[in-house]
Image (cartoon, rainbow, N blue to C red; front, top):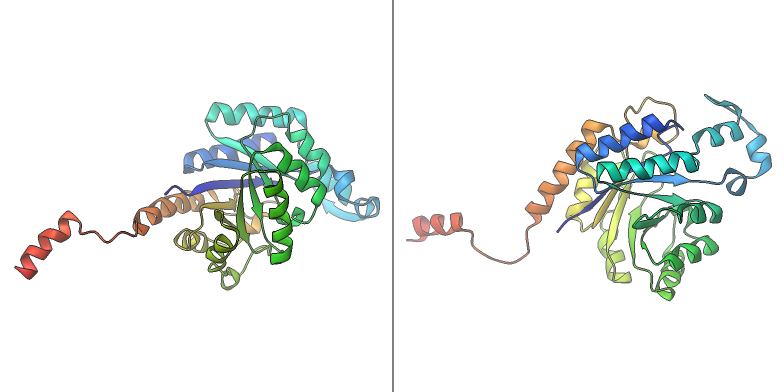
Length: 274
């Protein structure tokens, strides 16, 4: 059993490539299997009215300035691609529009991701599924009927996928985790089911492994007090290291499910049963 651990950098790099590299380094040191980013074509994802509306940020006083300030382009992703190869860690990204998915196709990423917000965007799902790459599909905010429809698209294209149980509140109250749904989704869809968490701390994510999660994705940050809407639902470097260690320990603790006597237990048996 090896739980696939994803450090979700998302937009927590705040448009700073050096900060992105530090977050990649954090994931490498902690022992994560992959890092993930988010890619948007601002004018395709948001309306002009929304982009022109006011919002104070380090990049200006409109929503457009903030959204564009957070986006990486080809030069940055070329550097991310090279840096991750150098560090020996996989990277991929969730696209929030068709143009962004086509942009990501220029890189030889092993994985794709459907964000919870995109689960009902059929055109985008068709484009992702046609690539045939192993795809993580987040199920936050989704009904079973909506998940059914997304799964049908991936099965139609014979694209391998893994669902990710998710509650899309930032941060999520632990009592809303509903980790028993992991097994339920696995039984319904006959596939692997991971967990994408937005809660504070690491306990829920570790428990998710015991509940059957085959992958764990968590937003990471260098400092939760930094600017950004996702920072408060992220874990800091020491927490990420603890989470990875706890997950690897949990894998051992869960064992094989076979009833066997260990050598140490055999010795105790001789003493207590004669």
